[in-house]
Image 1 (cartoon, rainbow, N blue to C red):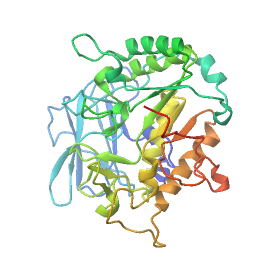
Image 2: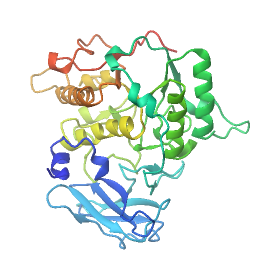
Image 3: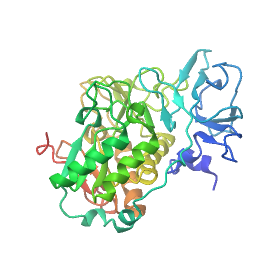
Length: 382
């Protein structure tokens, strides 16, 4: 079945293999890169980058039928080149956007996407991956929660590479008797001062500490010491930075159009529109990406309560179709996500950071639950 069709239907769980920037075969550096981006309401889309002197007319993309996807190739593009999409809306305004599916990003304060060949690492954790138990039979977990940027730095205050962090963290966690490490968000984000919860690059491990291959090495180190790796994952909301997902094609694309649903004013962020099937494909693909491509053993889903309640943090809210406060689209998204992971990756932990008495958080989806394997104990943490 056509992958673009599945994406439009909210059923493409590996949309990162179609969207974003991918090397053209043969992958010897001579074929350039192929680009694909979802921007259904744009009047035009061009790729601009260091390979075409940021010329907004040099590399146009073409519509892929009625899918809302724009595609094209830049034969001169090479690994490590920087790029963005020049998206023209229907009023003629042009905005430079980072690639939602970028595999690598510039280090702040710069914010362009970076071309990167993902087939860049040879794993050494085959025995670990083959021996992982079912997540619901994993036994007690002793989890060490870590923010890599503040856990350890060089004496001059500069960041340490993922590889050195991996060696040190694996030694420390093993010596202290931890069975799992939970990393606070490592997806690309703008501010060093934050813990990473305002994500601007969902498929891009932050370049503060190195490359995707370097991060895979960190995961490998922990696995070789028998330690699970859990990532803090933020599918509830995203920041309003102009280069990010917000109003991506000149319209509220990834976010709800109505501000009573589409903004979390307390956090200054947009809220994902879980009613859009393409947004579900984007987010579920992102979860699958980290679990599969980076061998991660589980996800801790941040701010689940803000997803479940339409009136979360709001005095003025938009009720659901029955007049209630429940976000029915978000519930359906979580059940779809957890149902997929349970069916295809039963070894992976799916942990809800949920702070209310919402019922059946860990009950299976086929029993009308949300389908998480665990619920984060909000009273037993730092």
